[in-house]
Amino acid sequence: MQTADFIDMFAEFGPVTVRRMFGGHGIYHQGRIIALHAFDEVWLKADAQTAPEFAAAGSRQWVYEGKGKPALMPYWSIPDAALDDPAEFAEWARKADAASRRAEMSKKIKPSPQPS
Image (cartoon, rainbow, N blue to C red; front, side, top):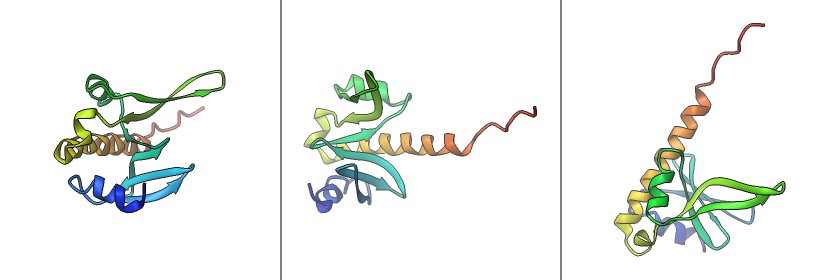
């Protein structure tokens, strides 16, 4: 896929930028990564709040073999119902954006170090 393909795919959701990474692409909205293109597939970001929704919609979580055991990535395949429906896809992209926002906030809010 080319950059223009990703921009078209996310058009109903909103503007995205695309950067090459790890032999694939990172797809960003407002500077936050919301999706990846890897292994000829687009994977949307999810978290503990949205992963059950992706699973219920029949999506697959990106898993790879790492250090002798499966490593679960926070990215899920696009639900089949959203593949040919731009409005439906935009809803899932909004879920990915919300997961990315929550991840960003959790990084900003770190507990203060405890005095020794």
